[in-house]
Length: 137
Image (cartoon, rainbow, N blue to C red; front, side, top):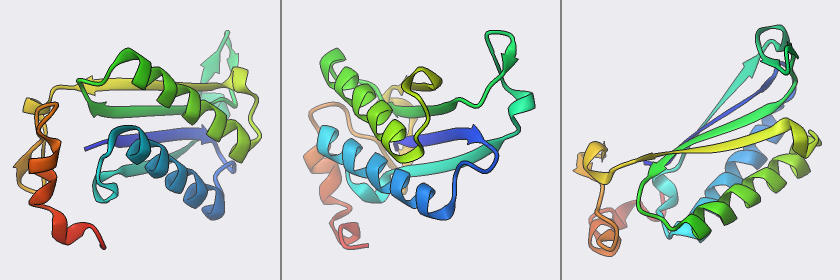
């Protein structure tokens, strides 16, 4: 379910940078939540800086918008936000003041993936068992 949309100025995301960011998003999300890596999706979008404004000026900022399942603690979300911000800074060399990371939380009842509705918080183990064949995918 987690869907990460990473936006940045045209030319910032080489294939190697995209791979490293996708690897790190997957690692951070899995370590923080116990999610199966198979379901973590990352999409990159390059944006012409003349089409994005911050403080009334064209912006070269990096944005990471993540649609995640609701039900995690504020502390857990805060640690993930900090980890994603630090990772984007380290990989892209974009200043932290020009990085925004935001979570959009979605109730488990409103998402179906691979034909199965997402589990309620606390029901992850039983849900994940039906996808054991994907662990090596």
